[in-house]
Length: 328
Ligand code: ACO
Image (cartoon, rainbow, N blue to C red; front, side):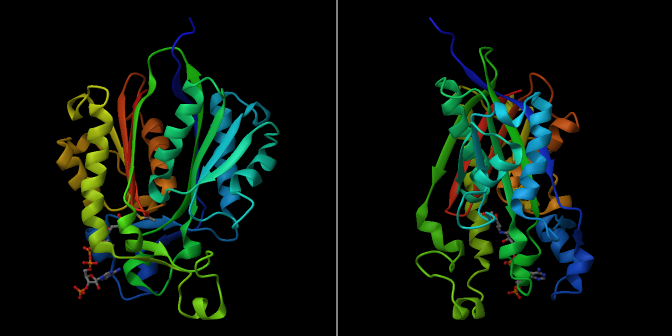
């Protein structure tokens, strides 16, 4: 009988554009202060594109992940790009990246689960790998949130950044890698965090642009409360489904939306703060890229080592939420 398959992450990559926007820069753009942004969000600076596209960032991150796994583009069976800010409505950004990587035999699709997209992608890739359908999957979380940011709205423009993080997923017969995933959503909160215009419900017109309906709008305070509950709950469910608890966790990778959400979710879970990875101060919220970039940096910094039990948990527009438990 064939052995049971598990999904391992065998390569990681990341890319943020070189341009940095600091809190001091924002003080000159809107009525805000470094003190307010730091205390309320934990963010000090964020990277923004200057001419680069999402597919440029994704391609750079993907090349690094491929190199880490010792693969070439032509080895890939599937490319998934999680994003809410694709290069264009269609074709998918994953198809544009397939061309750049010369990944001729890869199937491609984009995934829309906002900030939870990387976790949704891990769960989908895990199904393809453990079923034996595909051997080499490239998963990317990438965003150019600056393209949907209203730079005159101080309640949102201080929060977001641009970037991409990539992972190569491959099968193993060892009992390690992705050991559980949990996904959830609640469309009753769809209005809390959205871009209203530019879709088929309200196509872009001169009037929608004049009203700024092509920008991201968020009811921050209400979103905050649901985020704390949902991120803690998702992590608990993913751990409990394989008989584990927070006591077994060596490193938590939470979605990097707000340092206060991260601290509250970790407290809900009962996790010490030294086990919680945070890099929000450098990048802000990069939506689905945040989880991927945080995982990359946690591994680079030695916070995740072979054998570590990692729980990734995220929350985003939809609302969506989800978690993934990985034995590294
Ligand atoms: N600088 C100074 N003051 C500000 C700023 C700013 N940049 N932004 C808002 N304020 C003011 C408000 O006007 C308000 O003033 P008032 O009391 O006079 O009315 C005051 O600060 C407090 O505003 P709140 O919105 O209550 O501030 P809060 O503590 O909730 O922080 C924040 C706002 C940071 C947006 C927080 O609510 C948050 O992080 N929310 C969740 C974000 C999130 O998780 N999003 C989900 C993922 S994102 C995705 O899916 C793309």
